[in-house]
Image (tube, rainbow, N blue to C red; front, side, top):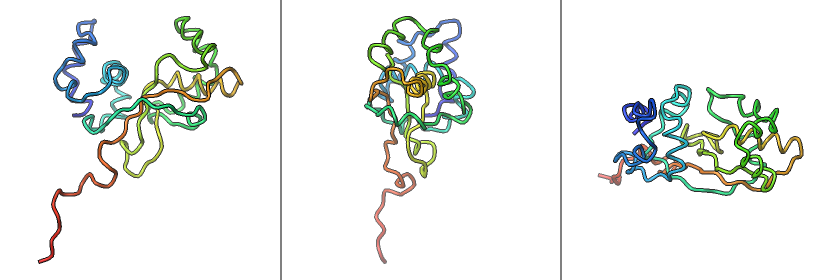
Length: 186
C-alpha cells in the first residue's frame, strides 16, 4: 500500500467529514498496525499533501515498522527532511523563540521546563527511501526539529535526549528481491 492508495479515504477529510477515529478504523489502515500518533501525523495530516507524496509516495507502507526511540539531541543537527522541503528545518532554526511563541502556550512551557517537544516527531530510516542510504530523516516535525536546532545554537535549555517515532524497514536490507527458494546444484 502506498500513499496514493489512500486518496479516496483522505478525500473524506475535506470539510471535516472524516474524523481521525473513523480514519484509523479503516481496515486497510488497521492492518498496518501503526501507532495512532504515527497514523495521525504521517497519514491523516499529510497523506495527500503533494510535496509529501512526492517525497514519500513510493514507500510501501506495509514494509515499515515503528518504534518510539530516544535520540541524542546532537543527532538532529544534520538530519535532513524530504527534498521538497529542503531548507525548511534551518528556516525554523533561525528563530526558534518565534516558532514556539506562535504555538499554544503549553508548548513553550514544555520547552522551558523539559527542553524538548510535547509530541514526538516522525523520522524514517533512510533505507526506506533507497537501500544504499543510511541515517534518519525527518518526515513530520520539521518545525520541532528546527526549534531544537535553533535552541541548541542559541544555547537555550535543551534536553540531552528526545523521543521520536522511527520507521524502519521490516525486511533486512538486500533481501527484498531474493526468492524464497534454495539454489541446488544439478
